[in-house]
Image 1: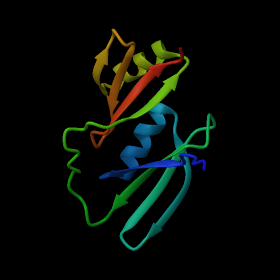
Image 2 (image 1 turned 90 degrees about the vertical axis):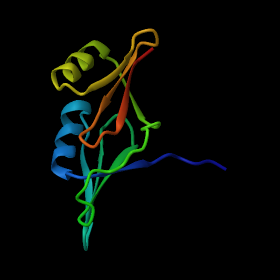
Image 3 (image 1 turned 30 degrees about the vertical axis):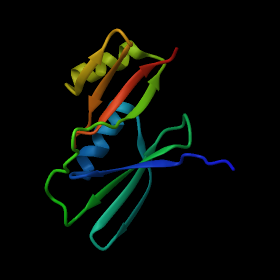
Length: 120
């Protein structure tokens, strides 16, 4: 039996701020949107693959999300690691660097950690 990973969900407190962050920081753009009574779901992605990040905004949850100890993350690989690092430094969103492993992490507006890895 085979399974294909298709998306991961992050709940966000400010959808427009999150969409702007993901586009600027990682080049992810809106692929499709669904809305209903009290919620909006936006799927973002890129042309590199079919995996998408699902950003969910809930009207009845205006407070920041409690992410616990944030012991989870989504990883992104880039062929231009140095340029990505410069951009993320300018955006002031780098939260942790591990030079020995050659990786670093950024945080989105809601505090989700995103790992940045070079092509090896």
